[in-house]
Amino acid sequence: ARYRSISLRSRCRPEKLQMASRMRSEMTEAEAYLWNAVCANQLGVPVRPQSVLRGYIADFYIPAWGLVVEVDGWPHRRRVAYDAERSRQLRKIGFRIIRFTNEEVLEQLPRVIAAICANRRKFTLARARA
Image (tube, rainbow, N blue to C red; front, side, top):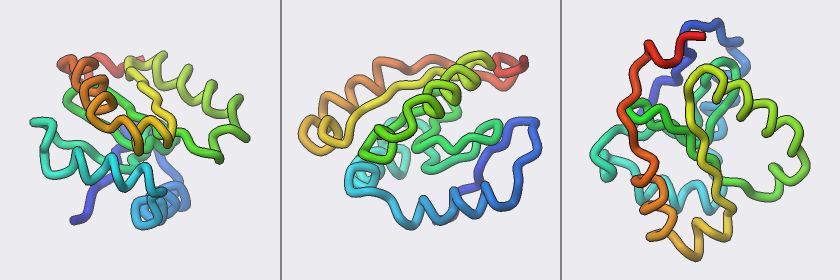
């Protein structure tokens, strides 16, 4: 299935969309494991993998809840400052971010799914206006 990336009222460079598309086809083991658990509306709402939000690529985005789910593996350990700034920018416009390590996803998937569901909240585009 093809998923459209969301760029919420901001221009997105074509290379960013291409990178998100490549990342969808090259998910890490933990991302693929989580994706298999949440795809096809298994949470009751659509989940979009590798979506572009205001110029940043989110591992998973749940539009109905305004929730960004990040799965942090070794690449995230090298870019802590970038991830912190991305989270700050996305929170500033109304998104919520929840993070899990690869190990949490691979070893405690039911707990990860429960934590995602515990963070559900109705979200509308009006909340994202800065």
